[in-house]
Length: 192
Image 1 (tube, one colour):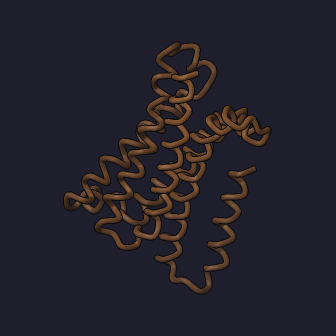
Image 2 (spheres, rainbow, N blue to C red):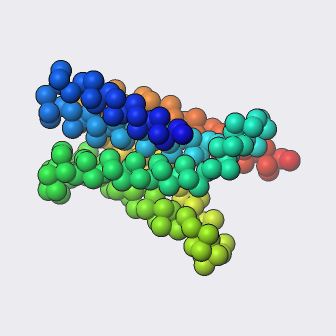
């Protein structure tokens, strides 16, 4: 439901802006809109566990029961963002994506995060859980690293790209919220 609402908002916003905005800006809108929706879905995926355990509220427990599908949907949105970014902004030219130190650091951080999310996506089935055993949990704990790498990548990219600056405070607040929720849960588990 959350995924469908996010996609509807993106499409409705894109269609509403279509007559008013040049085509290049519309592709930028869709590309960064997908990034924002993907990061929001990742935030919900990472926060629903600690919130369900801490509050005991049914809505968070319902999200926790669907956490795997939230992760799958968030990866699909992030993959669509990466494809749009490479097609519309970089025209499949790696030199456009990595020119200069700031772009190189952002490239490594963001694509490293994408590779971690890809590995998590590919191992999200029950068969993969059985095949990997305890290594499955270790791999999926890297999701928080991927989440943090995205925030770092956006920070580095926004240092050089003014169009990304409005997104950074939102990404930073999401990242801090997830880190606080996860760390407070670990601290509570260590004392309890």
